[in-house]
Structure formats: structure tokens, C-alpha cells
Length: 382
Image (cartoon, rainbow, N blue to C red):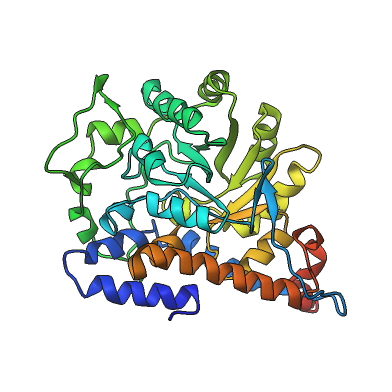
């Protein structure tokens, strides 16, 4: 049995590439834009921080319980909104929802995923913790469709992705995938976009390929990528009492503006390196964002590059309340279906527990900046 997320990634790749019918799915999971600089740096950033453990401080019992927006979770690791799971499993995002529920943590449902939100809620435990991700769609009815269903189903927050006014067209070639992913066929792609070009959408019985879906000028493409603004966010805030979390913030100025606007949370994220290449690794910008909103009640989360329990603890030490995983969840699903997602979460939980004990932290509240130091602090100045 695989014992690390990297091993699960390797086995998932081998499994998918053995079957030409699904080989493109691996390419889709690994897509990054430009020269893949942001994607690569998001992984490297964790290596630039070192632990400085507290001696004689660990206790036999380690608790990883914490809260997000007042809701308890068993560990500070949630599942990020993802796309592509339907090509790996018939229940698509519901597999992640069930895995998150078993692990007593949270899952964020993507608005442009493969499972309608109404279907998702019928396939997951009703007592699970779920947030709904959305864009500020061109047609507000699409945003409201997600929000109203989230409210009825007991979701606790709306996660608004704010880093994608346009699609980045340059898919990185350096160590990157081929473009066979464009032939992936989805039965109900971007299932929660219900209105296109002002008309109610009809899903093709034959499904739709990614190439057809995201072609320039395609209605779905125009609806997903649109130039939203703070007025649109104000409109959304006026439409719901659910907490709003902004996803895609990578600067202190934007964080301060979001905090003054009244959002409940900020998810520091570079979109998995799939949008603007060259933005900082989320971990690199995390400390300044935490500092920018330190006098507010805004909670800070992070995604991007998390692959180990060590990574989780470093992010927490730098101020994140919780982290989210996207690709690792897809690796688990590709490797061993729903059980593989369970394995990924269990691996991260066990690794985090061990790392906390070795650093002298018995609870999440004991984790702070004192247990990490940037590598540059160990190099003497010339």
C-alpha cells in the first residue's frame, strides 16, 4: 500500500497512462500555464522553510482539531474545488465529499465541476461540512443557482474565485502534458452553469469534449471567464447570509481590500499554477497576507503545493488556519477510487501528527511562527 502522496501520484500516473482512453486525464490533472514557474515554485516554497523544534515539549496525545468559520474539523486539511473527477469515477465530486465527511473535515464543491449541486447533496452525508465555490458569472442566474442550492443544502460558505477574468491560453510545455486532454469527454461538464447566452442550457446526451467546451467564443467559455468587479461581489453579498471566502488572493493590498469589504475568509491561492504564471507561490506570500489582516477577524487559508504533513505544519506556522488540497485528491481517486482519496487524507493526517509531535506541538493552537525559519536566515551575510 502506498505510504506517501508522492507514491500515490506515481502509481496514479502509471495506471492512467497504461490506458489510452484515460491517459489524457493525467495530462489534464497536471496542466500548468506558461513555463510552469508558479506551479514549480509552489512545490519548492515549502523546501525553503526549516523546522526548529521545541525540545521536551511534546505530549503523548496529539490533537489536530481546529475550526473553520466556527465549524469543527478533525484536521486543518480540506479538499479544494477541482475539475475532472468525472473522468475517473462516476460519482465525480461526491467521492471527495464522502471522503471528507469520513475524515471529519471539509470539502469545497466546484461550480464548474461535473456534478450538479442538487445531485451532489443526494450522494454525500447530510451532516458533512461543505462549502460551494463559484465565479461571479456573467449571467447572475448561474451564481444564484449555486448560492440558493448551497443555502438549502446547509453549506456553510460561498467561495468566490477572483483570479480568472480570462483563461490563460499558454499551457506550459516544460516537463508538461500533451494536449490529448482536450479529447476528454464529460457527460455534464460545468454542470452548474445553467444559463448560456441568456438561454437555459440543454445538456448534450452524447456529452461534450473539453475542446468543444472551451473553444474561443463558446458560450460556456464566455460565461466562465468574465470581468467581475467589487460591485458584483457586493451584489452577491446582498443576496446571501452565507459567509464569503475569496479564493485567489496573492497580495497584501488585495487582502486588506477584501477584509475592509467584509469577507469572512481569504484563500491564498495561485489556482494551482493554471492561471497567471509568475505570481508568487502561495506559501511565499502567505506571511504578508496574514500580517495585512492581523487586526481583523478574517480567517486565512492556503492551497498550492501541499503534498506532506510537513507542508501542512509549515503553512500553519506561517499563519494559515487550514490548507486545501486539489491535485492530491485527484491522485488518490485515480490511484484507488474513493478509497484512494481516504488514503491521501489519512496519510496527511498521520504525517501531520508525527511532525507536530517532533516539533513539540500537541495542539493546533500551539503551532506558531517560532517553529519555522526561512533558509536565508541560516546563511551568513557577506
